[in-house]
Image (cartoon, rainbow, N blue to C red):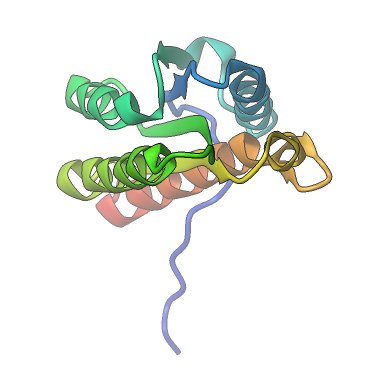
Length: 157
């Protein structure tokens, strides 16, 4: 029978950075709060969490790269909110944020999770930032813990 290797939600001893896009701050503050709550509930010490604010979702990949290169963190959580408007701006920002964040994870090997909402309306954003659809910041934080612990197991740490 094959061995099953997976991460856990035991965040004790982990150091996590939360990169947060200030644009649509009403929503992003809720995502950050959800991420902080999930980290704490899963054993990550408050003093082992840094929240780094950036202007918008487009800037998240660059800051995620800097944080990964700093070598201080076991995982990064990226949160933001891009709401579709009447111009193609949404496609550029959302697409580049997603591609850039994914590139940081693949290029550095550090667990980097995507908690950036890409929604049509403010109401949809509110529902995903603590409303009926949960809190995607909390979900991204839990995924970061799971990936960080999996990475440690696979490395034999």
